[in-house]
Image (cartoon, rainbow over all chains, first blue to last red; front, side, top):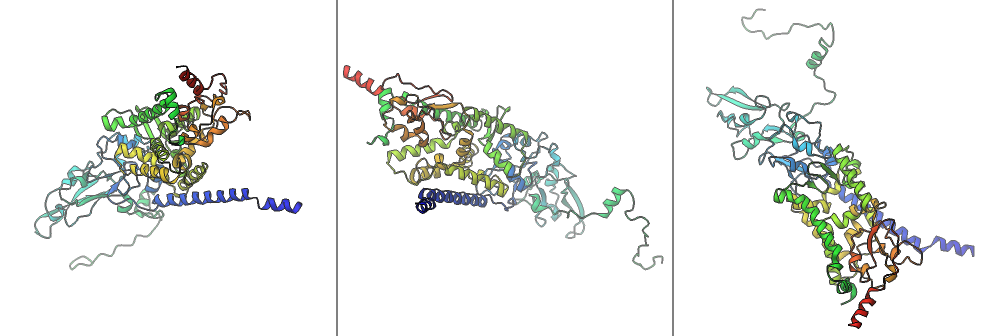
Length: 257
Length: 304
């Protein structure tokens, strides 16, 4: 009798069915998780031509914060921002812009950032000149008109931070040997990545392009210290009493020994 | 035509099409109104609510954020701004007060899609199909939350058919319509009431919220029930009906207390005996005095 009860308890078909069902639902849940992890495109960098709005958190953090509501798109007075379609490159539904189509006009009040409910666009950004949507690069050094000795200067002229983010650097024109080349030089410490230079480039294929920071900029190693800056910070020699040996100059004919 | 293929026919004959469709019409108007709050801006230049159902700003003062999306952002490791915290709190409080799943039947743009699929399924007399349990949705919800935590992204928002449909219509992201189409086909051919009643993690979330809501459907006239089964045929969550409708002997309240009830009111519409009505949570009155409406109508016909 006792054995029979034990057997029934051990092989309760209802319990077995329930366990089976639970297992299959758990497996289903695991499969959905794996699928979502797959489509989230975790390690995919932002495609080179697409830029995030000002104040956007770095890409992995942005993906955790943006709820894809489109409020920044609605706030943008110039219709710069768009929500990505599947296949546009950025994660579907997240905001981006293409500098060559409509660049960022760098509004003083940064309405897109203010509109963001979650802080995916960092509300700490209050000065649009501190925005780093990307950085301009003269990728067409061989096609840029200025680099051929002409005076186009358009990218330099339209830059909202003229003479800070883009300067013209005069060098010798070796081709004619009597003219100058005014090379547009981008300064990444000032460039906001607004894209006005890329939009304005007169060439059919822009010679200057704004690229996302992670693609276009190097970075110092965290431990790297520059001696001359440390010296300035300290206000004195970092190693006191160091002997400064005389520099050995090239001995030119007729120079004093 | 079998009764199940055309539930509500009797109620329409007895009480008129308008009375027998009043909550359905109200619901369609509500869904349209919520959509127009968002669409009036991009379509007609009259800005009421900006954004989408995932997060919005109404009249530039009222922030609303989908609490499930908010929860995913938290799990993904993001500390949201005050605007989103406030928005999610408002939405959560409103649904906790009213009835969590009112979102599903009165707001969600997918509801007309799945209702259409359910209607077509009845018309075409398609069998029940894949026998998924209603509780499966909680596993889907768990999967969605796990994906957010594991990937550090709001992964479900890539494919969330609700917000993508809104985005598609409001921002011109065209593939948003694809999700709605897939759900229609899933509900039509794979599982009856498949998406809303068994799979949707948003519905699962709002079911969990639906424990305190005041708005309830009551089977207060259950004494008149003659087992025509029309309510079961139209109910997207048919497991919620029986305890209330058949609970007289067991002394169970006529209030449909199951958290899965979406308070769509379709059972109220289609019942020829008008057994059901909307009421508040604590109203467990039972109506035993009203006579059978079918018999009354029959008596009228005989007299005439």
